[in-house]
Amino acid sequence: MKQLRPTAFLLSICLMAACSNKLAKIAQSPAYQFNSNAGVPDYSQLQYWAAHPQKHDPSDSVPASLLADYRHDSTVDIFFVHPTSYTKEGRELGWNATIDNAELNAKTDYGSILFQASVFNAAGRVFAPRYRQAHLSAYYPKDAADSASAMAAFELAYKDVKTAFDYYLAHENKGRPMIIASHSQGSTHAKRLLKEYFDNQTLKNRLVVAYVVGMALDPAMYSSIPVCSNPNQTGCIAAWRTYQTDYKPEFVLKENFVSAVTNPLTWDANASIASRDLNKGGILLKFNKAVPRVASAQVAGGVLWTEKPHFFGRMFYTTKNYHIADYNLYYQNIRENAAQRISTFWKR
Image 1: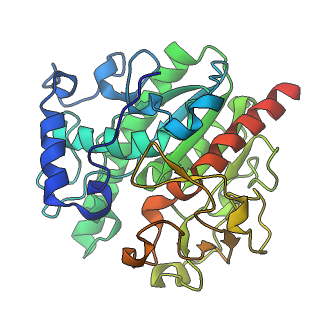
Image 2 (image 1 turned 45 degrees about the vertical axis):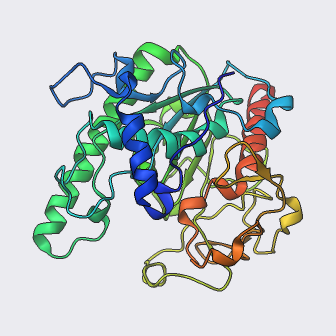
């Protein structure tokens, strides 16, 4: 198994200039030089996939501390929709990122593909399409004109995700069970994908589980896909977004529904605190090291709360919004849960 060491994960947290320089160097490699100038992704070409079983990519990486127990299951597929990596102020590429921006693609690969999609590399074959993602500012329109542009940006991004999924179904799936996984903007698109392709559709019979993380999820959105309520349940959605205990952002308080939340330590919706003793290991800045007991978890009215994460240097970690670490804090528990649900799926 090829081990890929992260060189720029800090960029996804703090956009430091030094990290940006490292990303620029990675982006100059042949792997990030596209042959097409059309601007529209062609998913028959591997270059339009951030992760794909036919190439080595950061999703193949396994933290050194987990290598001894690594066993790959090739009977299940994971379709992972990555979060927003197009975040620079000014929208220099427009409302949607171009598909062939080398530095942006490197940021995606050595950020979310390495630190999130790799969670699933033991569970099955990982597919993660590149797509013309909407700029981060699309979530915060300033006026009616911005709102119209933002909606159009999300539509274009979803069109790519849908096209990639159609290609995957037609050419790669071959009847395999599936896990749908996503984070942040990826979850904006994954929620819609689940509604259109799985809810009350025969394809639901092949859904092992969906991890739709980092965004609010209205439990009334689906009529045949329940929210996960135990660690062995299949055909369900596990969702959470993480904040420090006793903190909820203002926008959460204004939501007109209570978001579904599944505790990633107990895999139920019980409001009791799950001690950090149940946390098998989080992956923080050093990918090769799993940090046990890093975070607790508690379902708290539409969000997931945790005490301030326990790791060396935590005194410098002052934010109460742990959105960037929704997967990282519970990395090994998610990894083991995916395997658990697959085992249950095959026993049905």
